[in-house]
Length: 279
Image (cartoon, rainbow, N blue to C red; front, top):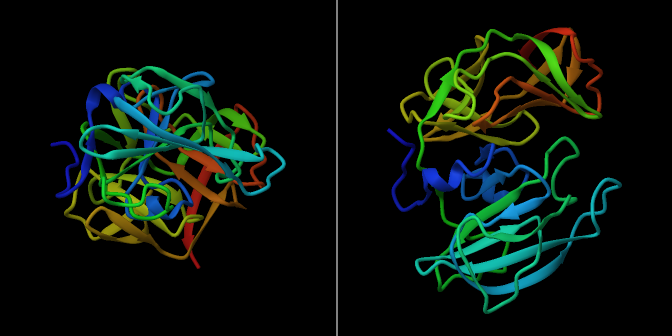
């Protein structure tokens, strides 16, 4: 069954399939610690709206200074009728009073200093009750996804198929049906792992609330309380060289573990053995 939780706002299947990737936990934002926001990754440089409703406000927000990032981020508030949606990382092309539908272009994606250099541009989405302050960073409701995410077993090995200055993606685990459904790296004891391991304090376990232990490639990496995982103190290495960690997410078009960090020095075609060791 889809990963539903009581008192949560569900992002439906038809919305999620407009994006090639999503993550509830792979972010340093406090809202992601408990899965109270979702990052949605669209194709291209423009942002399709994940919600329908009336634009309440748009506001420029000063972002942490980073050499790769814009000086300002932006907040867009949209009244969906049931909730107030908060969207970040989009320079708005809409104004207060306008009505938008799901899929409408709402602006250009912003490369924000709030996220790490290895993170692709995306739309951050959270929800508030109407009586909650929509401008505060905290206070969003839990978010659920209206899709099943297929768990993909991974043995810790793979070949590099794509690289950037601070990341490398492996060909393993392989997506079983690109374009058809979402998949992610399996927790060895059930469910799909989500989040930055171990560079963000918390991660997620989607699709299965039963396991209390989280493990990757045979190594325990955290303890689950419901769907939220507290990562253990571990070191991730690629061919014996430490890296910042693993970026774990749910993908529609491809899979493959993503190694991230300033120390990632791998080339397309390299065979990689990833190890996770407790400190």
